[in-house]
Each structure stands twice: as structure tokens, then as C-alpha cells.
Amino acid sequence: MKNLPKKSMTVNKKIPLRMCIACRELKEKREMLRIVKNAQGEIFLDFSSKAPGRGAYICNNPDCIKKLRKQRLINRVFSCEVPEEVYARIEEEYFGKKS
Ligand SMILES: [Zn+2]
Image (cartoon, rainbow, N blue to C red; front, side, top):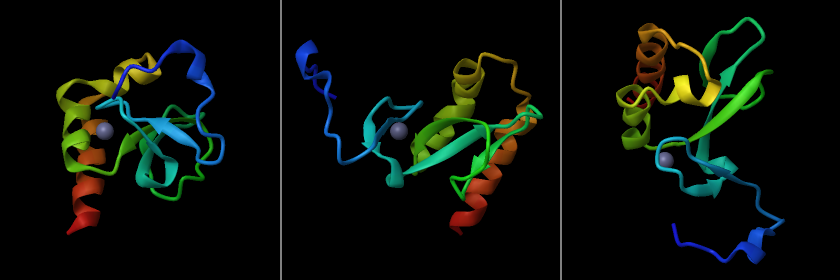
């Protein structure tokens, strides 16, 4: 990502961009996957993009998905301890759906 001057903070209004929590690139929402933490504290990949709760976005890209677990990114995004099995399940769901 290039460094933009501060004045151009008004990003393109037509396309909603989201930042990937793994590679920090801005991409169109529809190119990304949503990770949700719901009111029950459950964290999961939201394939429907409609689950209620706090959301974070990540590229629909195996490299970014793998980074999640390696760098414990969900802990940081939701500022909480995320058990290993949450990461395992997300990987399983993602890579399971792909095949
Ligand atoms: Zn990414």
C-alpha cells in the first residue's frame, strides 16, 4: 500500500473498502471474508456476511487466513484471548469449503 497524503482521507465513496487484518491492504468488501464475534463471544467465519456482532475483515486468500493463526490476529482485533480451537475451526472451515 502506498502512503497517501493525509488530505486524501476521503476514500472512494462508491466502493466500500475494508482493511484486511492480516496484510492490511484495503480491498472491496465483497472480495473479503468477515470474521465475527457475536454477543455470546463466539468467533467464527461469517460466510453469509450477515451474522450479528463485531466484524473484522480478511482477504479471501489462503495466505492471509494462515497468518491469522500464526500471528494470533483475532486476539488483537477483538482484544481478547482466543482459544486455539477457534483458529483451528476457522482454518478448517475455510480450507474445507475451498476443496
Ligand atoms: Zn489480506
